[in-house]
Amino acid sequence: MIIMEKNKKYLIVYNICGISGKDNTDYYIEAIKTIREQKYKDYNLMVSSCLNTKEQITKLKNNCEIDLINLVTDVLPVNITFNQAIRVGIEHFGDPSAILYLDSGVKFTSPDQLEELVSLFERGNFGMVSAQVDNDMGWCWFGLPVGTVINENFLVPVGKALNLHCQLFHIDIFKKFGGVMPDIFRSYCTESTFSFLNVAVNKQWCVSGKVKLHHAMTFPNGDINNGDGLDGHSSGFRAPHGTWNDVFSPHDMTEIISNPEALACGFGYEELRRIFLHNQNCYDQNGFCLDPERLASFIKSNIFRQKEDFDYNEIKQETLLC
Image (tube, rainbow, N blue to C red; front, side, top):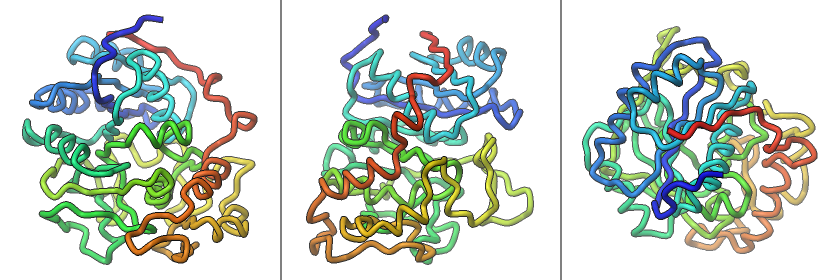
């Protein structure tokens, strides 16, 4: 095993996918350049790829300054490939303070934005810190219009959510659950669990009022509420719109939320559609969980895959040092 620079404070993972058959390499190169143009430099940069072609990967290596590429050659959703990229990144670089998830369609729009995001993360007790994006932010969770922009930092309450595009995840979440994205989900609904991951490690979720990025989207049916990301929405796993129980066997969300422990520990799920509301008696007046270890135990056992069901060590992949 080759150990690279271990003193970098953050791990940035730029996530790309070739399952749809689209070739977005030129966009990837532009997006990665906006990362490298940031003033803040205390990070290692990984690309997490799922089934992008060798030609695309070679073009990235030849045109971008990347520390590591993890190329998964199994058909897997981003929840799993991102978790696996973190595992590989930690193996090569050591533990970061946090991991920055970047959707392939995200571009920074000014050179101080990463610095601002990191500064916000370090000023508070945050498990997650999100940037805003110009498309598909998910303000519907708060009854707000699609194009809403906020100008002050905002704490996401327990049971609420926003869409994942550019977001820091505290290393404590990874250490607690063995991954930062609940990985039973094939397509929809992952973000609805994020607020519970935060309180399970005694932290909060904050959205920056200053960092506003571009997120590439297409709207094939003209519906601003049902667009596609750059690499295609849930490529390889797309379920009908509105699905909330598209999970890997043997898991089943109906069974999980019917378990009495779900209510007793303070868990909630897809509260926007009132699928399963959390028990408010499990929380104090500031929104912190009264028994975070109990909640964490339920989350780890129920919305993260178990080794006997899925072994990350068996993923087919190639790791490329750049």
